[in-house]
Length: 132
Image (cartoon, rainbow, N blue to C red):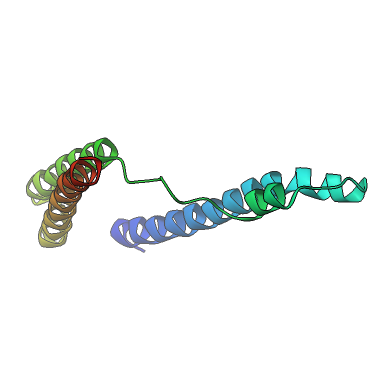
């Protein structure tokens, strides 16, 4: 098996593990949010319906995308893509077959970074228009 195939397999295994870890972490956090409600019900305490509603619902109002986070992510992604594109030229003497795939991945990463920067600008404009 070639090194490139091993790299591809490792990449997909990493993505699968990261996805499952995120799901498990979200499940555990939700369990911790509901735990006080379960304990109160077991003890027979009278609960205010507003408290139950607050614990059972996930609040998303007021949570907006932070433009700074998008900018940082966009800059990191763009520079990573540029680094991969440059690496494609440097690796060509040893592994010529990897030049164009690496170059394509680098260009795609640069475009994703540009998209994140555009999203940051859109989030800033939306925050300004809704605030004023």
